[in-house]
Image (cartoon, rainbow, N blue to C red):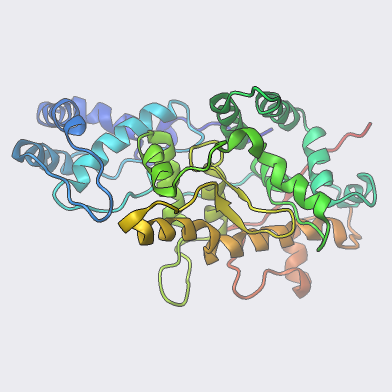
Length: 372
C-alpha cells in the first residue's frame, strides 16, 4: 500500500490548526478577515522585477498576522484537506511578504519519510528476462493492486484523441500522490541502456505527454503566470524552487536529493508539468518556449534553465536511476536484505561522492510479488 494520508494534527504547525487558533483571538481574526477580503484580491502577485502597491491598512493587517500562529504554518502534499490548507497558507504568505517582497517559500512541511521497501531481489530478474527496465518497473506496478488501479485510471483519462487535459492532469496528480513513492519513482525514473530508444520512449510516455502537455506550446512566463494563479501549482513550484536549486557557485544543492525528486514529481499533473525531452537521454524540460518574451527574455530563459540545466535535479535523477539499475544487474546472494546495508558492504554500490545519501535512514525494499 502507499503512504497513509497524514491528518493536519500530525503536522508541526498545520495552517488549518493555525487558522483555528487565530480565529479564537479577536485581534488576529479581525486582521485575517480584513486581509482576506480587502487586501488579497486588490493586490496582484508581482513578478520578481516588480514591487506591489500596498494600501496602508493592508500593511497594518499584515503586521498583525506576522505576530500570529499563522506565521510559519505548513501543509503536507498527501494530507487530507490539502487545498484548504494551501489556500490559508497563500493568504498568509501575501501578508508575510507585503512591503518586503520575497520569493515564494515552499508551503510543505520539510520532512522526508519513506516506507521500507523489501523484496526477494532474485525474483526481479524473473520479470521477462531481457526486457528493458522501464517495462520491468511497469510490471512491478501492475503486480501491486493499488499501483495498477491508479495507473490504469490515469491511463484511461489520458488516452484517446478527445482526452480532456484537466481530467488527465487530475488523475496524474492522484497517481503520484497516492501510489507508493518507490513504485512511482520506478515508473518515472527507470534507467535505459544507451541507445535503447524503445525503453527511452516508454519512459518519456509515462506521463502521457500527448494529453498531459499543452497542444500549443505556450510562453514559459505565461505558463508560470497560469501556475501562480492556482494555489496547488504555485505550492508545487515553490517546493521545487526550495529543494532543487544550487545555493552557490560550486552548485551545492539546497537540500537532499530525495526532497528534490519529491518536489519534481509533485509538479507532474500541474500546469508546470515537466517531462523527458527525448527518448535518447535523461534531459528534462518544461513544455514551453521563450520566443516572444521581449524585454523579459532573460527572466524567461532563467525559468526554463531551472529545469533543463538544473545540476541538482540532473544529479538527483542520475543517482536514482543508478540505484534502480542496481536492483536488476547485481548478482544477489541473499534472498531478502537491506539495500543500504549491501551498499555499505560493497563500495561499488554506494552513491558517487557528489551524491548525498539518497535516504536519511536505512532503505528497505518491500514488494511482495505475485506472478501470473
